[in-house]
Every structure is written in C-alpha cells, then in structure tokens.
Image (tube, rainbow, N blue to C red):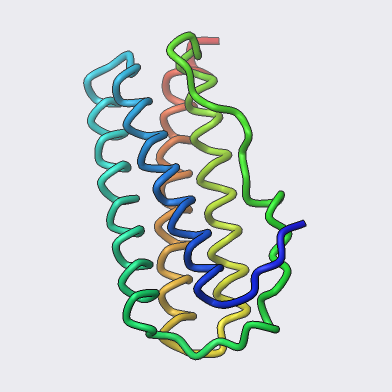
Length: 151
C-alpha cells in the first residue's frame, strides 16, 4: 500500500494517472473500429490533458491547504486498472477497459474531494469526478449500442 507524504505526492499521482489516461485514449483512437469512436477517444484524450493541466497548475502554484496526515492512505489498488490496451483487443474489451478506468478515476477524485480541507481543492476534485463519471456513461452507452444490441 502506497503512503503519500504530501499533497504534492497526491497531485503527482493524480497527474500521472491523467497522463496514463491520455496515452490510453490515444491508443484506443488508433485502434478504433469506427470514425465516431475514434473521434470520441481523441476527445477524451484532450479532456484528460485538460485534467492534467489543471492538476499541474494546482501543484505548481501551491493552491491547496490540505494537511498531509489526512490523505496518507488512499488504497491505491482501488484506483488502478492493470489491463493494458493492445491492437488485438476487441472493441467490446476496449470499451469495458475504458469504463473500468473511468470508474477508478471517479473513485479517486471522490476520495480526494472528501479528504480536502480547502474548498477550492474540494471543488476541483468534485468537478474532475463528475467529468470522469460522464466519460464512463459515454462508454456504457456505446457498449449498450454496439455490443449488447449485437448479441
């Protein structure tokens, strides 16, 4: 279990997860079966870049007032998805993986928002959680439309 020593450690972790999400969606866009989903994956990659930029600005400008002892154990395993996308991955598997990644990101930002003592940080993490839940819904709708209806 990873222990965070500071708010910067938490933000660095969240920033690295956002970069992983950017890379993930770019790869899914390259392997996409339809132009529509390629566009969706590319849009999500851009949104994840925006999340990374927001978190980096918060970290670099020191816009937080959280106490490190309040956030030392975030149970990292709850927020990681170990499966990596591959060119051989089926479309349905890619959608499932995307849903799981978005759910994990949602849980991370909800937990961070609950632990934040500064209202601005709480609002930032809540808004990121909402965005991640919207991403998950988009993939669920796509899965329902193109996977479940074909079966």
